[in-house]
Length: 275
Image 1 (cartoon, helix red, strand yellow):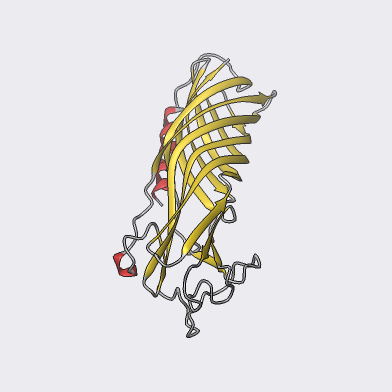
Image 2 (cartoon, rainbow, N blue to C red):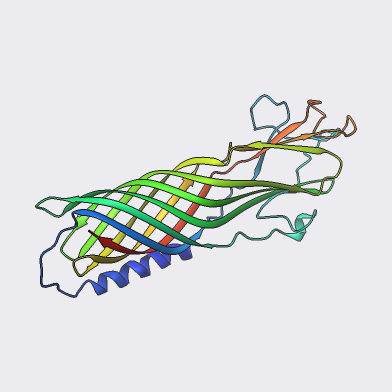
């Protein structure tokens, strides 16, 4: 994955820069503020598909079938937004997006090299993730979510020398996620429901290089997983003939959801000022 290679290159560059010896003793103890700039992306995976609940019992493991008993979604799924109603038309790809954040934190360091800290941050990004299902009618059904704001509260722990801090980090995340739905189906009606506030966790690691008494620069790689697969539901209803696949089992309709969580990977470059 290109993001992993970027993280390795950034870390290597900082290690090489750390060869400059300072003429004063210092620790990583105390408060700081920081700004970050970077790039985020999403992984491709086989878990990007749509799940169905045709009995409306809360179990999204059903197969939607036609009146002839055939899987109505046998054409399958794709990562991204459908270009047209035919699977051969393909889907748009989810692009990487810029990532900006402001953070503040506090580190503790005793007589040794062990550093323990906490950090809180607010990040702005425009990560868009779509998945599409194709029915045999033919028609497409696209579920889209967009990550706007991402807040994190993490701990971090690592090794700190006079010049370099190498650390791991992990903690909680909360995000504002905007959900959307589009389809080429003009027979049924669709009712959406969901929650835009989503919780999750973050984990990663980083390296900071101390330049002077107050300033440090670094690079960080962070994975965020937001528990979003159950937060947005589309109810597919009539009016339609009784043989319509979505109302064939339950006249009230069929619910559909995404099967995947919202995973985002980001490489960030950090500028910090310590008080």
